[in-house]
Image: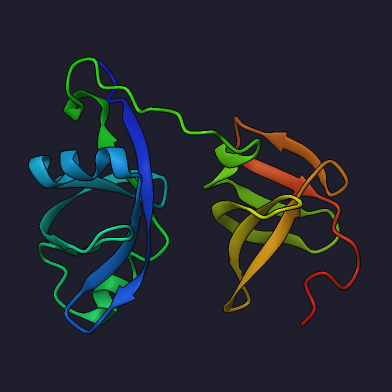
Length: 174
């Protein structure tokens, strides 16, 4: 039996309202496919679990309502989860046009581990600022940005999805 291949298309962000909706970050190229297929897979403890889309509204960061997720408490359990489609769900010959890519864009979804502090969490996004790229993650209940550059990044292990850093003292303090 062939192993299913998945394509990471984004991630859930945070709950929206009290009816079980989630704000999501889905790559624009895949939004129409999600609407047509009506099914995505969320990474739950390393397993790809199917979720059926009841509705999608909004652009940019759409608000998604999954079937059988009926309240905020259920939606809270699905926050900051990677969203996948089956490779076989993509139209034949489907290609995502590569934009001017960021050097570190591929580390989105990796764990950021500091040599002193330890695991800081999962990189939710990589953004570009005028001087450098920054990893966006949630740490101790707040959103933080960590510079991604040769001064701080010690190593990147793509296989285990880990970015090891040596951050200067005080960078995480606020």
